[in-house]
Image (cartoon, rainbow over all chains, first blue to last red; front, side, top):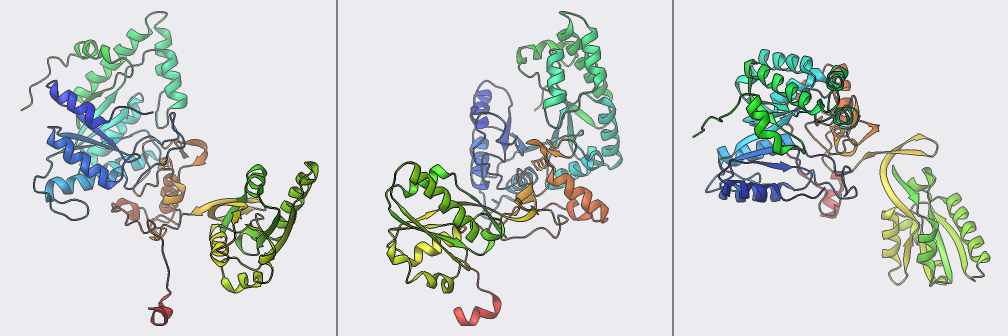
Length: 253
Length: 222
Ligand code: SF4
């Protein structure tokens, strides 16, 4: 699906006084374009960059497009770290004004092989990631296990982990996520609970579940924050934040 | 070996439309092994074309000739006395063969009759699976003999991605996730250390045409 370039949308957010998280996928750009965009984004006051592989081009409405995948997300992280810390492009040329990016990546605690997930996070940390956002969390047991393993490996002292929260709007959405979205783990119990909420109350139950999760994440060792993705429900974010008692937002200098 | 698949018949008849005297040239190499462009396939295609032309009252002469390999000039030389009698050539070889044939007869239109698809293996008779993209920087040694460039839909070097789905690739439940397979194989060999290390960005070597000179021949050719 074609969307406005993330750097462009991020510039608008900067102009609005917000701090955007600029996203970059390896599917669409080669290393030259990526580094060039990072320089441009930084020049426009963008300070965070999320490095993703990107969903395969086969999804969406341009399935025959050529995927670039010149470098992968792991390599992108190290390229940006090298730009920032060593002041060098991947090809070795010196950068006079290195982009001081805060580097992010994704982590999916639910993708098999489960025992490999923390190791993959370790690799991303070694590559130079500062923060990670997890896949939407529905299976809390597996997530707790993942956090425990990452804590045991000493990983969560080295990276800010943001737990992914996406409230369910409907039973249909939950079932779709369970069956159709790769790398998503939606337990049957959750669907049961949503169904049990009864007619007209499912969406509210979804928000309630999300708020309970956020409460638990606030206390969880190694979890630095939450990544709230209210998919096609963006206008609900203030309400969810309010109900999860994460307002007002702290000032970050 | 190289694997190919015959083009749709309409595309072939379309290409030959303007010519009345066609030589269809097969190749006894890889494309013969994968049943796409050997002598047998030349005969089959010619018979199919003849019947189409007959049905439509089109007069056209189609003849066949299969050489040992179209990727070697020595074998193409066999065509010296034959090709002149035709107003176009059709090749059932891979893209390399087609080009070498066209290079040999620069005055003659040359049309490919097959699509060159892959470097692959024979799963069963008639079933071939792509295995190699000829990237020029073989990494199989550290990926348990499973190619991430060919088999991973995103060509990841530090996989698996977050879309891996119970052993399957995010793009389809019919395709196994290359990185899950790499993981399992290396785990079985106690070699997970190989993929704990970050693999640096690839130095792509297939972005310009490559010529290979084998070491013992270096002196002779450079
Ligand atoms: S699911 Fe596996 S094979 Fe498919 S793109 Fe991701 S890592 Fe590659």
